[in-house]
Image 1 (cartoon, rainbow over the protein chains, first blue to last red):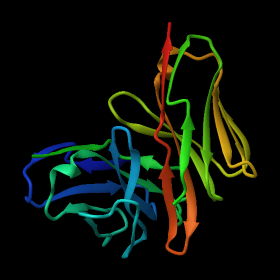
Image 2 (image 1 turned 60 degrees about the vertical axis):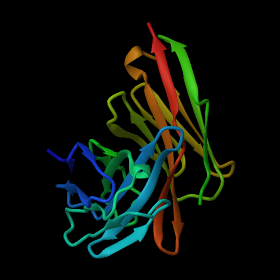
Image 3 (image 1 turned 135 degrees about the horizontal axis):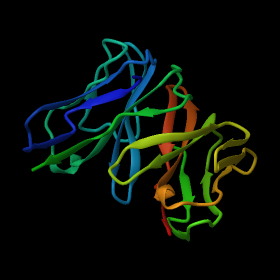
Length: 114
Length: 111
C-alpha cells in the first residue's frame, strides 16, 4: 500500500532532550516536507527536500534540523526541544521534485514538550 | 511569502445544502491545493489546480488565476463532509517550490 509513515505518533518529552521524528514513504517520491499545525495558525512548512541531499528552509525552520540521505526517508530532528515546539507535525511527499503534485500526508505526530 | 486567506472561517450547513468555501492569495502561484482534514487529524488531498475547474463526485474546485482566487463547492452536502478544508498554494522562488496554507474552514453539516 502506498503510504507515508511517521513515528512516533505521540510523544511526550522534556525541554532539551534531543528527539527525532521519522518519516518514510514507499512511493519513490522526490519531494518531501515537514509541517507543523497549531490552533489559530494552521499548517506551516518547516523544511522541505526536493531530492536526496537537497533540503531548504520553509517558513518556520528555527529549532529544527532535517536530513535526506535516502530518497524514502526524511527525519525531523529537534536538537533541544522547547515548549513552543509542542505541536502536531505532519510529513508529506509528492512525486515531482518541485513539489507541485498531489500531496500525500503522513498520519501526524503529536508532540508535547514539558 | 504568499499570504493565503480563506473564508468563511466556520460554516454550518444543513444536509443537502450547496456549500462554497473561498480562498484568495497574494502572489502568483504555480498550483493550488484543496485539502480535507477530518477530526482525528488525517489530511487528504482533494484537488490540485493550476487553471480552470476540476470535479470529483460532489466536489468541484475552480480557480481564477487573474483574480488570485479559488473556490471549493460541495453539492448536496452530507454529514460525512464535516471536516476542515484547507487551501494551500505553491509559489516558486529561487530555492524551489514552497507551500503556504490558509488557516482552514471548519465545516459542520447537520442532518
